[in-house]
Image 1 (spheres, rainbow, N blue to C red):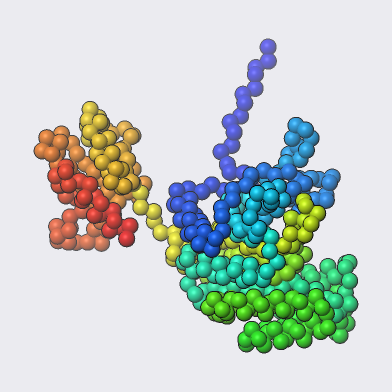
Image 2 (cartoon, rainbow, N blue to C red):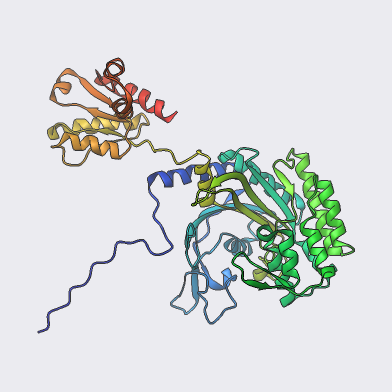
Length: 491
């Protein structure tokens, strides 16, 4: 009889494009999400937690590639042969929820949502297949007040989580203005229009001269390769360049330049008027160009949005992997999308919203030194006598009852040094020590582990004597003494 082949052990490795998050990272994210939720709630938005799984038809964006219905998403075929997929953003589920429950929801409907999304894309440095988003949307009103409110709320959110004024700007543009420019150019729907839009999207990378060349005959890129242009004449390209370079010293100057760029296009003029209304509404609330500005160079998602678009950009510098200074860049974006719910209802439903890239914003806060410090762990009650385990549990119960994070050491207590090493690895601020002598005397030893580490590293013997890191106190004083130490490090 042939010997049965031994089943190999599974490889302990995170799947490609995914990562694990540990204590401090999870805690930091929760703190930030709670801060964001508080701002959204203050603005009157209600929380929504929709399913992580949607039908592929409901998601829609990655179809009509019907031959590969899992294109771009993680999808599988259900028992009834319908295709299901993990959500790739939080907006498509909102459209489905609103269409399904619209008779029971208020109009306009304001909702915020936070959670992971999944994309079946090629991973890269800092680019994962699972990541967190934090969205806020208003569905059911065409008023520009909704767009202005989203921009104001975004500015407030950034300041609340720790991005000071001056380190960010919320930039606003309007898809209708660009449509007007394309109309003036005489560019209709089709390959040429798509090529023009792709070229406009490169403006922040190649600048005015680069866009001009790409709209015309083409240009050499940084590697020396020649990139073919769209083939427009200088006269045809001029309205696009006028649009992209129309930002003036004031909002009024920018709006004047945009009116010139759209010429006699009705849709373009409508877009400029909407931008003017947003600027007026924001100014009335005290949001000036130091926080929110009209900027025609914002061209995000031009095929998706139907009106105003906005982007939050962090303006402070960080060092890249090669030590070169660069601006941090965008952490949030959104705009008006009036056609998304229509896929379900057949009727146009106006909507506008914003999505914050949670991981990007957390990275920005760490770069500013607002997060990423060493996490303070729990107080550790050490075990000197296994027979007194119930008494040690009583100690930890008192600490927890007083709101202090604490735990009893549950490993092998024979080697006391290992208990202190464990406490150090946990980032514990304090260790409680009590053996038979302490129990008989009604005392405990309190060891300030953080201070002890500092003294061991920097202090002289005299300083150690003046400020001991371990001291004895009455058992009845334990909670008060521990709280004093812990609060000193928390503050």
